[in-house]
Image 1 (tube, rainbow, N blue to C red):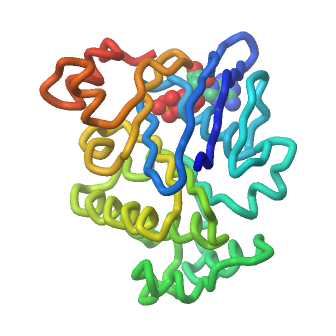
Image 2 (cartoon, rainbow, N blue to C red):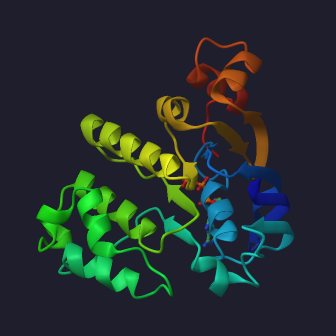
Length: 238
Ligand SMILES: Nc1ncnc2c1ncn2[C@@H]1O[C@H](COP(=O)(O)OP(=O)(O)OP(=O)(O)O)[C@@H](O)[C@H]1O
């Protein structure tokens, strides 16, 4: 079963084409990676698919819904963690979870979520005082508080130290084990290789290659996914 079906998606900002005819599908219960150079259009794809941005062209279905026209219904069923997601400095972990839970008709039990994701000791800790790893853990919990079927994670591990990254990988695998489909935007090929069932590599708003990490590595006749990535993208930024 497909939870996301994107066909011919396009989006321009003023006269710059950010996404130029992208097609891809995500199956239920998979971790699907989107990788590519800075400015390739990854965040724009996620924003269009999660109902946060209106597309110019193409068709989009997420859980059978049109992300823009049906966004009220869709937002009840997905979780989104966006790049540079921020909360007020003074908000406490418990307050943030309770507030996000109030946005949903049928939220998860935020206290249970806080326990499950190891945040119970931090319930009264202020957001500003959390380390990067704890902030990311909170963002994951916030993305899950609506009890979503699909979660979008945009550069979740950027800026984390190696142990916090590894910890976050475990949390993402836990999501999949619970049957949640995950779309993961990442710049790290080791991360894509370790976590993703399939990956789309995008460049200049188009899909350059798509497949499992093993397929992409083989297609690039490369020793590693990272080598394949450089071979496919030319290694530059856009
Ligand atoms: N709100 C906006 N207004 C104008 N241009 C934008 C806007 N958002 C993105 N762009 C441009 O669209 C292109 C694609 O941006 P997008 O953020 O989707 O790429 P990305 O692959 O996520 O990049 P990064 O890896 O740097 O996060 C870039 O050229 C960017 O400058």
